[in-house]
Amino acid sequence: KKPNVLIFLMDDVGWNDPGFNGGGAAVGSPTPNMDRLAREGLVLTSFYSTPTCTPTRAAIMTGRLPIRTGLLRPTMYGEKGGLHGETTVARLMSDAGYVTQAIGKWHIGENKESQPHNVGFDDFYGFLSVSDMYTEWRDYHHSPEIVSNPARLDMMNRMEFNKNVVHARKGGDLRNVQEINIPVLQELDRVWNEYGVDFVRQQAKGEKPWFLYYCTRACHFDSYPQDAFRGKTPAKYSYTDCLAEADHALGNLVTALEETGQLENTLILVTSDNGPNMESWPDSGRSLFRNSKGSTWEGGMRVPFVAYWKGMIRPGRVSDGLCDCTDLFTTAARLAEAKLPEDRFIDGIDQTSFLLADDGHSNRREIFYWLMNNFSGIRVGEFKYLVTATEKDPHDSVNPGGLSGSTREYTWGKQFNLYMDPKEEHNYAIRKIEYSSTVNESASEHLKTFLDYPPKVEVTIAHIKFEPWMVPLLRKHLEERKQQKIGPGVHP
Ligand code: CA
Image (cartoon, rainbow, N blue to C red; front, side, top):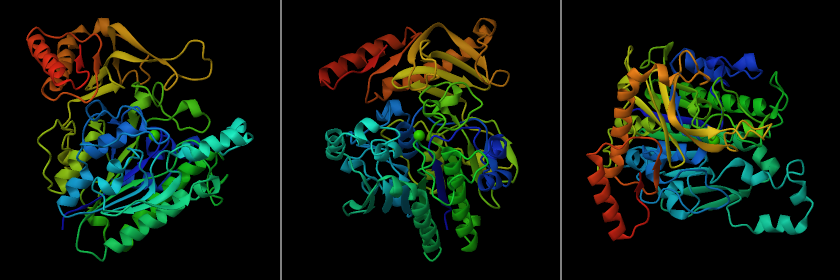
């Protein structure tokens, strides 16, 4: 039997939140279940998401960077767009004989073509968008100007986005289960967990391998813990209580796997979809690194990661080898022996040997940082080279700038040593020119792929030198795009 794959994806959880990365008890929110998997599995300290929710989720689903799928930022309040024309890992695994289940947060497009049961999942139980959209306009403490104004409340109620917990099966229609208000939202991680545990138990009776894409509500703002968890963490904040809920949910899934004899045949991957959102503080996670959600500083994109597979991954491994969220697509497809699409560029790299071999090394040489449609930078080894990044607004005394700052181009680029300077404070590019050709070569190779595989959206590349041989190709490409009248192409 091929292995089962469980992706346990949390929302806005920071690198330092789990105990295995130095958080846990030290920051008033113990995470015993994640820590157990970390002790008995593999921790990756350099695992990367994208700066925000939707792009990461789409990257996991498609194995492609947001700049290729066009899903550059979170879709909000019923906005169209999503996975049109893309091939998901769920579809590939389904074709390879897997039972495919999605639970919890979706947020990769509400439109029909992008809904989970229409992109390869056999079954979906959860909500289509993002946590705060269901509650922020219903909560007097956050939005008194809406709650106390019938006309504005009516505006929200009439706004066209799905406000419900939904259920759907492949080949069927989406069914609204229950409208999400605050008391309903409060219970979602419990209800979804029961659905997930039930799925795991049911599958033990079946012959097919399965893929479970399990996305918690925790810990996106606004956090409303269940009564059983409220005030129970040492920190006693709604965020930490909800993190405890997520940890508890993971524990329940592992217990169900253990009790049904499936643990030895299941790869469990635990991670988060972006760094902590420091602009919703104190309803927010923690990170050792600079800046936060929305940015390409490490705080925005470097997230906690554990891979656990009993008997297959040697317990107690820790690696700083590079791994990207797109790699989950390729690795899961590889384990399912699925055939990858050949008509498009796949950014994900097969990391099976990295995860499973006792002394496995990463098969990835670089991390590419993209800030919306701007090429932001590159990491090779411990070195990070930035050409464009988000900067804090100097007049904003509260927010660090992840989602409130502005995009800055660095004339000469900045170079950081992430071992010596995890907070990216000491730019020493001028002393490290010996690396510049390595970095430029890697960046050029990456950017060259956009000539062969034109992206769906305009690409902006600051400060990266185009080599002369690229220019005629680029001209030819732009001319073709113009003739086809299919919108903007590569913009040097
Ligand atoms: Ca998120």
